[in-house]
Length: 124
Length: 369
Image (cartoon, rainbow over all chains, first blue to last red; front, top):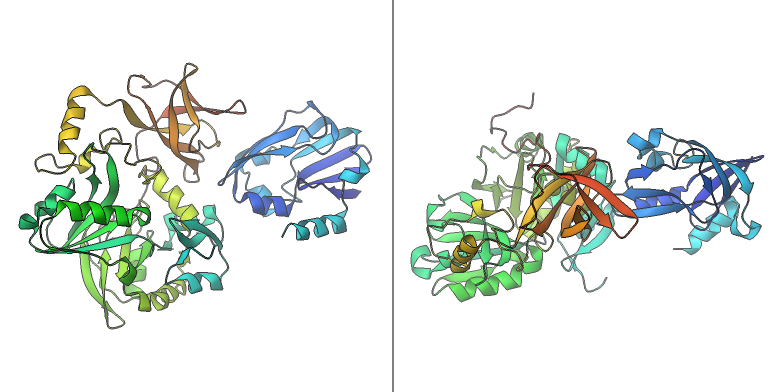
């Protein structure tokens, strides 16, 4: 399994042609207490850079973008009533959706852990 | 950031690394641990808020002879010594210059607690309305700490050793660290709560003493805003302003019409011809939050805008206040709160307060359970 990160602060765990997607701890901290998430429908086809779902925190309403193209096979329905799970465990229990990958984005758009750490350090 | 003013408690806050923000020209914590945990703590335990930025005006003089009654919508003569009342300063058009609490310290002394952003404006307005007496801005010499939550009375009694026994809106003098302090039973959260007025030089020590009590946690502006909105309390600058009258804001209760005050004629006029917009309170049928500036649509027609909105942790839904065209009849209907094309939230009118389990009115001898 490989974990990648995007500059929009999403993470993807890729296992063969399946990807699990969520937002990083950095993103969760930036958002603050998450109060709402609109999970996508299972079966939806989604293209890379399209909006995966709406998310809201105490501070603001925001969007999460999809880092791959494919079809949604599973969503983390616990987040419906308890979106704060994303704040508590953004990269484990706070996973958002599982996707059957049809197309990965350009390798240049995906960072490994070290590259992502450097990236967020550069943001100050 | 260097033009922002620091309260006497700034160093205390810095030690625990909150997320600072700016408010009315002051640098204040938005949150320490997190907005929702701090909100929850206040509703169940005891929270302290740095409210040193608020304005405090002192008036000394003959109340009747000075004409100061004309500055406020509440009858000062009916405020007993040692009590306070919530009310407004209005302009000639009945627009709200500020909302405030007027405390009657003695027969001829008032303490007026106003918003941070409006102190100078309020000072000017009151000065223009009095013909004798002395009005002083004592904001710089007065620190203020709000202590709110069901356990706060126990904390005041055990930890600060203050023998507190006060009714709602009562204000009393005490001695703390050999200095004179005032404690009013008032607040902005809907919980049992008090506001502590103290000399700035002892404020850090008192703050630290309170924070060291295991029942107490600090809460920032983020939590404060959600707590007040859950009670339906207006925020000056968002829900009320010089462009709104108390009638439009559904706050006629805080006007004593049997006295003279600036703005009264305009209010009477408005009562006669009807007001063009009115404040509504609503809850959404989801966890999505209405936010300031979002549109209010009834049958696809925009009838108003949201003035304040948030997710309410106490209710697990969105809540908000807004103004709509008085001609629109909403009543039981579901209407939409929208922003552009992407946000569309169903909402319904709700009777205030949104949160109905606040401990605000606990009798002073009350134990929680």
